[in-house]
Amino acid sequence: MRAYFLVAGVLGLTSLALNFAIAQSQPALPSAAPSATRPTKIAEAPVLSGNPVDPKLKELFESKIIAEWEALKHKDKKAYAELLADDYQGVEIDAKGERNKIQALNELPGENVFDYTLWGFKLIPLDPDAVLAIYESTMQFPPKAQVRYTRVYISELWVKRAGQWKVLHYQETHVK
Image 1: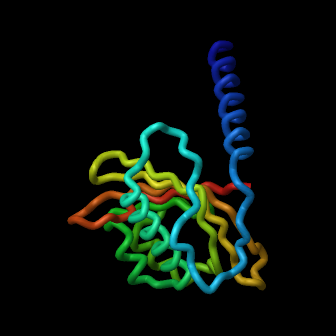
Image 2 (image 1 turned 90 degrees about the vertical axis):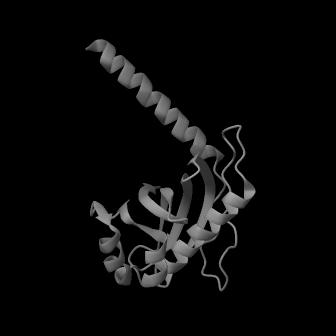
């Protein structure tokens, strides 16, 4: 039993040190002030592995993720639906648990994302038909909202279905 607690303690400290090191290496948050134009590119995270990703693949997913956030911002149900797989599952920071595609689309009119900033983009190809995209978003809410900004770390699993890339799984984690 002591060995278990020793290993758990060492793993916990290692995790804490790694999280601290990553947090210290992150760039300062860009201004989340509303802008008339959207970014055409998401700021990249530092490369942690030795295998570079095909630039065309990165460009493709950057544009898809920006389209996803634009659909959220503009409450565009059709555009958002086209990006989600039929068996989509997503978990957001609202503590409402996992939601499927229909639930995510039905919640769209209630979204209050006024603007957003995306950064720290990292793409991990898993096989020819699956990609893991990781990035952070700073969301800005309307001026009269009780909470004006929130920052989330996001992981999305994209899969190719019938020749089209779709989000299969979405996971948000709150970042302070």
